Image (cartoon, rainbow, N blue to C red; front, side):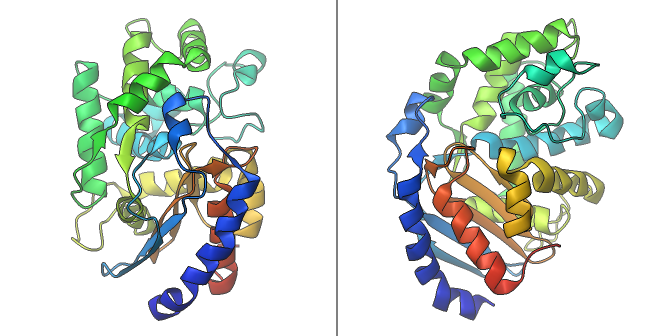
Length: 311
């Protein structure tokens, strides 16, 4: 397949790049608004470490909501399924990713799933560590392991920008505190600090593809042979990626591409073909539902060409 990818991917990237005109770079976090609209890069990595990269794959971007998949896995390893699902549900919402509507309307008032903002904040509160700095360091260490030892770091300018404009996320967090989803002992501002930090971890396409490869192989890094995450937890995470990973376009993406994926508002997309490939994409121009317009189009083209759909 890699020979075919090398031959066809440049043309597909060129076709998809035109879709950036249909999107806009996220501006509600000021630091993200600085990204060039027409950037598009993709890396596909296979189990033996073979990879192909096309476009601006060295462009650095923050993980944003993609990080939620990996903090969920870490929370599972810290507390098990029962501990995590005491705080979040297992269902798509049908609402915007930063909505608090169902927290008030639906009992018992816990977030519907761990990939919306409220759910990810609840999951972040479960990460073990005595201080926010220790929790962030544990998260960063786990992300580094999943990326094959890459030298990852938090982009402090983006984290500060998120914190300064996070009025909705603060509202969600304090609502969760009032609903007792966040325990009495939990300091809301400390949880938010860790949340902003893990969303602001900076990656490039090859690093993201390597992280996706671990998920594609059930929590085992096939290049090193190390198991980083129990298979059961990865199964759950991939299920959430299919049902909730592309915000309110998850159903449409499942029909058109049919592979597990998670997007972020920096324009990143982590996607995978189970048992085969990890994929990292960046395309900062977003559609109305918060996904990279060019990146989604590119994945749909590739999935159709290679018959990747799980369905």
